[in-house]
Image 1 (spheres, rainbow, N blue to C red):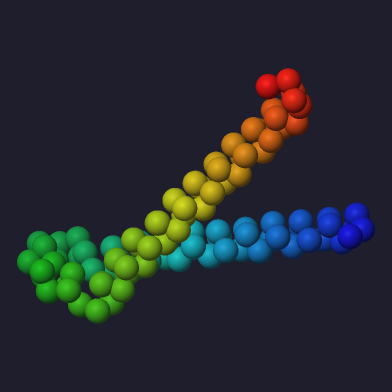
Image 2 (cartoon, rainbow, N blue to C red):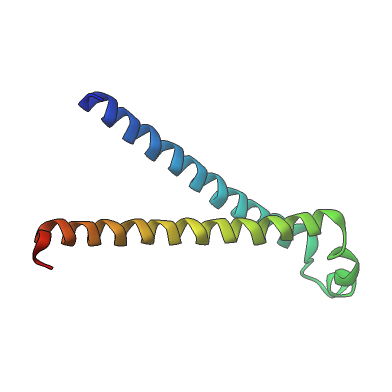
Length: 100
């Protein structure tokens, strides 16, 4: 592979990763707003209607999206941390060579 091919692959990979991350963040944010708007009415009447509203299909779907998008965001941060730690360890191992 040439330098330009490697550079283009890295740029494409970063763009795709950021797109996926922004997708999950946006989905989580929108679902949270819609859940509050349609499933938890901020009145006494809303309080009385909560047992009925919370079991409606759209509210269940919003909760599912909120839960799973939150998990995906957490997994992505964990993978980023893993990647950084691997790079630091690889740097240390290559820096010292066989003297460990």
